[in-house]
Image 1 (cartoon, rainbow, N blue to C red):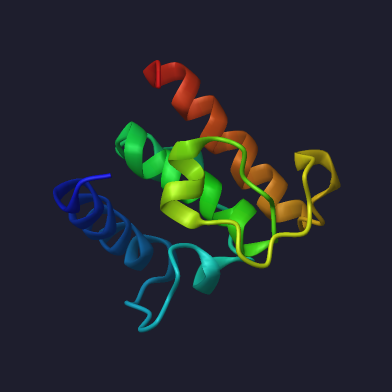
Image 2 (spheres, rainbow, N blue to C red):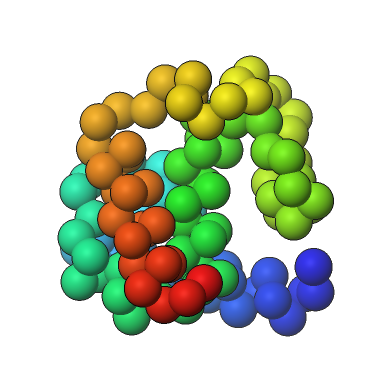
Length: 111
């Protein structure tokens, strides 16, 4: 993963958070600070495939999913992971819905 990609993704995500919460949140880890918030497709559609991937997998990381791909392990790591199966990850209903919408937008974009 290049430093340019990491910086660009972090910038894109940090720009996205205030749109969800209405204010910038210091110390937010991608989507932690907005966890209980429903994210509509309209907020997701302008995002890049990379940002959508980061947002979706951030939810899984925050709920202790053990990643399988080298890309995800390289980005998020597997320290402290507990769940090998996505279906076993104890996600709140709102987060399952957010993941579903993110996947729909990713598919529509051909990500």
